[in-house]
Amino acid sequence: MDSYVIAYSGSALTGPAALVVAVAALSTAVAWRTVRLVRVRRGVNAALRDPDPAIRSAAVQQAAEIGLGSTASALLRAVREETDPSVLAAVVVAVATRQWEPASTARIVELRLWAKAYAEKHPELRRGHLSRAPLLPGVAGTVPPPSLDPSRADEFRTRRDQVSVPVVAPTDEAVNVPHTEAAPDDDALGPVRVLVTGAGGPAGIAVIRALRGRGHHVVAVDADPTAVGLRLADQQHVIPRFDDSHYLAALLRVATLTDVQALVCTVAEEYASLAGAADYLAEAGVRTLMPPLRAVDLCMDKWAFAQHMRDSGLPSPATGLDSAQGVAGPWIVKPRFGRGSRDVMVAQTRSQLATALRQVPDPIVQTQLTGREFTADVLVDVTGAVLGVAPRWRTETRGGISTKGTTFEDAEVTNVVSLVIKSVGLVGPANVQGFVTEDGAVAVHEVNARFSGGLPLTLAAGADMVEEYLRGVMGLPMRSERLVARPGVTMMRFFCEVFEG
Image (cartoon, rainbow, N blue to C red; front, side):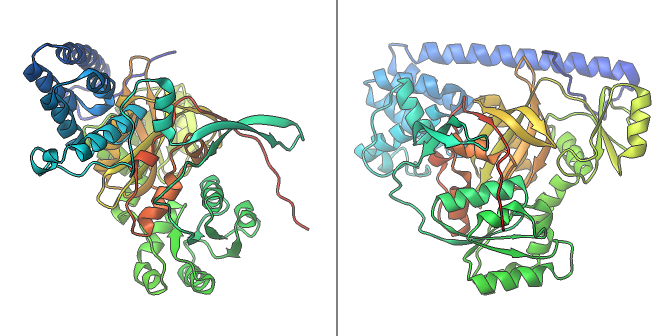
């Protein structure tokens, strides 16, 4: 697999010399960072086995500074063997002070559950070390001691029991596919009447199916009367497009007639209209949880997003507006305000680039990234805290929608995705697209302020993004322990028909 180069504009040098210097500097920085991190981790692992409790406690603090995504395994191993109360207390404090870090791995979830159980058994920690620390999340009841056994890891990854059930495909052949059966939920959200927009898109269909699977009453709307998602809901209505002057009136009429309690928007372009109707929706008794409009606009404007990434120092491809000046090839040419893969062209030569610039409307030009492409489904609470990041490889795509993919676990991907989301300022669901090189470097080229078309894979892997988002809409806390996707789950999509008449 070829590796790619992340190029940045704004260098004092220009032309080939600038590119060579940028490549050399970036390669050196990435290599040194990787080596240094490996050395630090080894030092922490060694210190956690030191006979002196003070040194072990200091190692716990250093592990927390590195991040639980990289050190949770070592801390779990340590607390299984640790007997000194001061060291165990240090672990609890370290976990409590890292609550902003997404529960991106099974080990983080298991470590937090252990810390919560230990703190409950030792109330003196609440009166002392944790007096200024946030409460540890987790489920009520008895929490088992930490274990590195793979079966326990799977339990905490998904909070589900994985089984295989036969499903009849359109070919009438039985196919064994992974099926996720919900674990008991003592804090379950009762049935909610939910209005879902964009019923014709892959994201809308995934949300409708997920909500109905959890027992909610779904009212689906779309501008296309033939949208298949309308046929999958409990009730369905056709309304004008979001850019029609009658869109809001029609949406409010449907919300009032069907007595819905919550709105889930799956089309980012609709947020501009919905933002002006928040008060009317509230008067109609419809709860919403929408991202700031400025954040949505930033994500929809690919040129503005590229400038934001550059100015924020976040890894992204070099980008030009209407030209490839200062942008190394090969190139990706795409519309500044496009969706999916519409009008996206690849240019290997200057001649192909010139053709693409003539054919693509309002084009931007980016250095083509190579490596392994991923999408990460993300959920952010009302405070801006990233509660869950579920990355998956985009093994095969058609029309910009993932048709084959596999969930995976990578601390650096989770870290970069979280930084990007926080810098943009999104709230609610989002999906982040990027690439990972063979040496582990991560670059992000796009963020969408909505659920993704590949959401069914994330849901099947155990990260219940839709239900937890609905909890947030209804004013209940979203639970990070239910937003952990089990790595290694593969999705392969096929056509399925719906008939009428």
